[in-house]
Image (tube, rainbow, N blue to C red; front, side):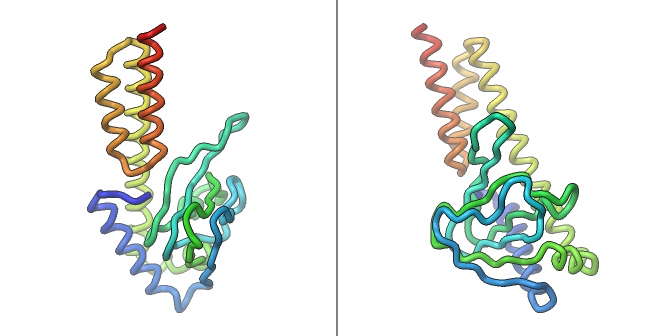
Length: 191
């Protein structure tokens, strides 16, 4: 999920550096994955964390009875799969290669957790990444909910503000969501 957010870029850089620092003590491999390859399956046990070297990954989530939705795009120097290190130890989404082939550094989750026990900087950067992603998701969700409320109340100015904000996000899924919301607003006017 590439971003213009300088804080997020700083977190990614430090996290990449810290993971690289521990490579001599953690089990890892480099994987070349073609476009379309599934690297992580939603609800599967979390056994590995991925650090993207080249290419791009999409993160998809599917709720029961629903269809898969792209919720993030992960680019070079970004970590994915780290959320499952803490908690129920299962992946919350499916991750697959969307642009590639992708070069992926695969780190065993248990080894990374073991390294984190002795490296508080690594723990803090993992928490900072997770926190930043949660804040970003909260912001996006709020914009979508505000846009739906604006549709419900036929408040064009609020709908336009929310759609414009969503379009400024670097995630193509949010851009298309803004376009869908605008189309709904237009259809509402013509109905």
